[in-house]
Length: 123
Image (cartoon, rainbow, N blue to C red; front, side, top):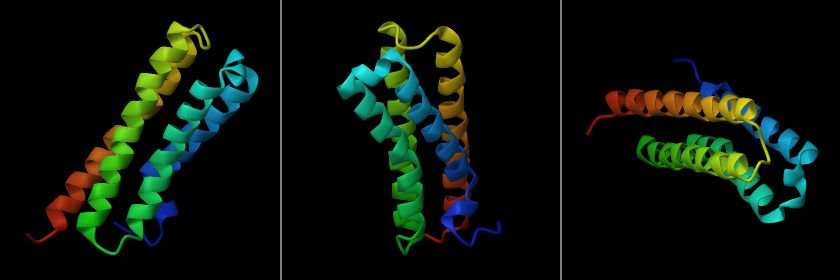
C-alpha cells in the first residue's frame, strides 16, 4: 500500500465526497431550517474524514485503528441520521438510498483498512 499522506486513503476521499453531499443537501432542502439536525449530520459526516486524518498522524498503528473505529461509528451515525431526515420528509427515498449506500461503502473501506492494518501489526 502506497499511502504517504491521509489524502491518499480511499475511505478519506469517499468521506470527503459524502461530506460535500451532506453540506449541499443542508443548503438546498428544508433541512436548512432544522438547525439541530442539520448541525448533527454535518458534524457526523465531518467526523468520518477528520478521524481518518487525525488517526493517520497519531503516531502508532494501534492509535490509528482506534481513530478508524471512531470514523466507522460516525458513518453509522450518518446512516441513522439519514433515517430521521427521511422520516421527517427532509429527503426522498432516492436521496436516502444514495447517501446511505455511500456511507455503507465508506464503512466497508474503513473495515477493510482496519483488517489490513491489524494483519500487518505485530502483537
